Image (cartoon, rainbow, N blue to C red):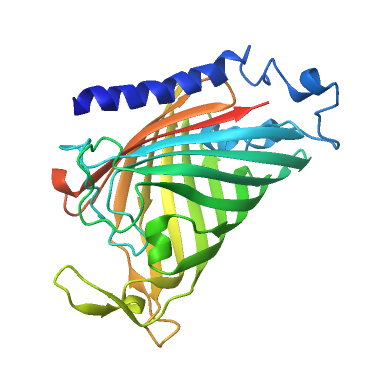
Length: 329
């Protein structure tokens, strides 16, 4: 029964992706049903240049959004359990990071984008999250609603290149609405990320580095609830106020549709709120992720992947995931 439900969920993701792809007529083409067709207005961006001349990486291009002046995007995802129990309720926190929800979840987000120039845009989005969607008997050891709003955000995005390096700069502000995060005092987060990749000639191989920093705001301090044994604990011992990370990655382009990708969380550090020394950080456990990127036209990218701990490769210390990015108009 669980396998049937999982197949149904994956089929829904692929169906939505196919609908987005069906509107495209060729590689790099925009949707055949555009806003200017519907409203009789111009949906082109003023200024010189083409974003696709700057960014050729399929994943980064899809995540940077449509080239139209006004557009919509949707992202669908399923974060599952381990490779031996991908449909299980539990999703191990293999990196021991502070903000992980240790439950399987499905999510769907929609955002609107305004492209100011061919390479700069503003977007805003919100979505819905479903905790352990394959479970029918309730969820154990989880404080929060199983279905809730998924953290609305506002983002600035800029694509550019330098010395042959393709780059995407993003700055985001996020308001927390996930019920378990609200219960823990989360309010908002400010984040900046810089994604870079360099293609090695015509080999199909690219080497990259993602760098990200973030600052989180809270409205709860001190002792606030009991653990599973009924003992009160200090909330500030298990949350971080600021963090930074560097994630090296490799990609290999097989053809116009498929590419292999691996990324590693080698240098990820968090400052725990109860730590008085501002320069003392906790280091997350190093993880490795391996996935297959599937591109269907310019504006659809599907990415099944698995994460594991390189120094302790065990089936019960893995996570599986599936995500899809779809740009409309």
